[in-house]
Length: 174
Length: 158
Image (tube, rainbow over all chains, first blue to last red):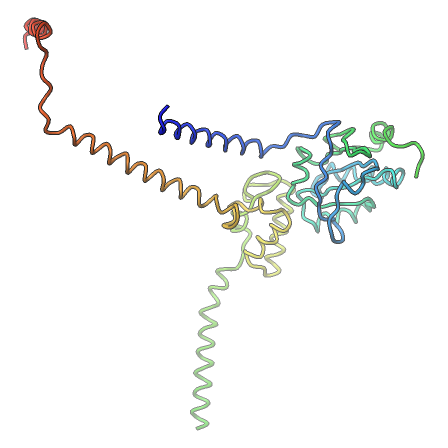
């Protein structure tokens, strides 16, 4: 093969490589049960500084992606808060991630629904992309070792939490 | 003397007033508008221009922009505020800095490289076609081929 042909082939391969990279980097794949949960540091929705799922290593964490403009998120918020009040403590917490939302609207949502569990802010949707979410709300139960043990792409209610999440949690209330 | 001073003050005031009058339309022209901004930013959830989006998230974004316009913020300040909320992907056009600059530079470089390559190609083609000029035509067939050609031609009434 001549030098010119080699250069042409390399140029075509580079172009194809760029296209493939573009396609792959656009769509993230959803984390699966058994996968390590992404632990990207995110700003706290209220207050200052960053927070991360990594802070809760050793505890069960229900990571809840939500947004204030999302109607199903409004429906599930009271159930999540009730579940947090019942089970929250050193061994379990709900961790809210307000994604692709205005921070003021997110804070207003937290106040309106009286959410007491910790909240992080994912303004550009980077964390939602890392988890491979396709919308809001989505819920991921992460075990004390940091692995996803259960997930639901959609809203939860009290009955669902009792039947699907509670069996994973330690029996004694902390 | 005092007359001269008052004339000078009057002239100065007139110049200032004229400057203010001239500046007023340009300030008004640069006043931010939702119509203009929604052409330049994205609805991050929909993945379309905000101008085309009607989702609940897009409605919140439009309300946010209108509030900042009401507060007297400029277009640049509003876009900065949107970037602070949603990240740089909210901008419909990439920023002309950092890695995003490549979005502007790469097409220009590619165009220049293509133009140079095309120029070289045309030059080579012209040289190749020019070198063929003035040469004597190729000699005709000889021997058996010549006889066969003559026989073939004789069959046609040309």
